[in-house]
Length: 169
Image (cartoon, rainbow, N blue to C red; front, side, top):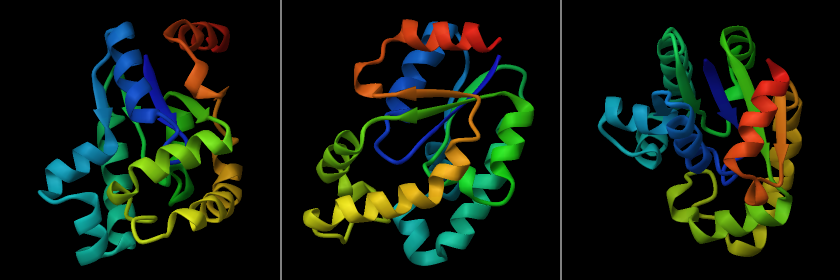
């Protein structure tokens, strides 16, 4: 089984990825963590010193590298589906699941942990909603290509994921 979790930052990809991978007994990879380890610097530092284009190239490289495996669950960064042909690669190599919580849930989560998010770290809290709306509008056409969509991830259970995976099989 090859599963890719995607969605906007704050959607719950890392949280649910760990839970679901353990439940399904799959190796788990958080793509951001893989990049941080390989580059030996934080995502924020990569953006600051090497730029977003470099970071996006590393995402694509590691996505392809990890998805050569037999079984896995990869939690992808929010922008992964939107660059190069990453969405096509994920759909060809496995099952894509879009975690799509309601906008207020995303905004609340981002406000609480914005210092760890380079794209919003310097934004005042009252500008986060407008940023999220704009970025979501740009990214939604890519996210909508996922084979499975799970909305309102704040109320989802592991059984929801396994049922949707079985329905998609």
